[in-house]
View (spheres, rainbow, N blue to C red):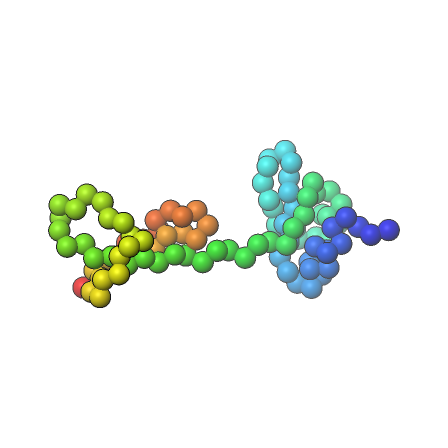
Amino acid sequence: MKHKYEEVIKAFLDGKQCEGWNFQTKEWYEITRLGSFDYCDDARIKPEPKPDIVRYALISSAYIESINLTSCAYIVDNLKLTFDGETGELKSAEVIK
């Protein structure tokens, strides 16, 4: 009889990071022991984190209230914005001189 997480267990034995789901806390946790697969509510191979998204812009006036970053394609950008690939939230802003 196959274990219901057989593919994840094989990945764990091959050295990949795996996670178990805790139904009560509604959170994924790292599986560090083979026996943990018998007690988790669900299991998965830990997904690869999404890469950060970098956008460049040209701010030419202090009076600009908003800017559409999707349409910026200036040759001389003066602002670099880095957004978290997972959450989409701004991580850093850098003035380019």
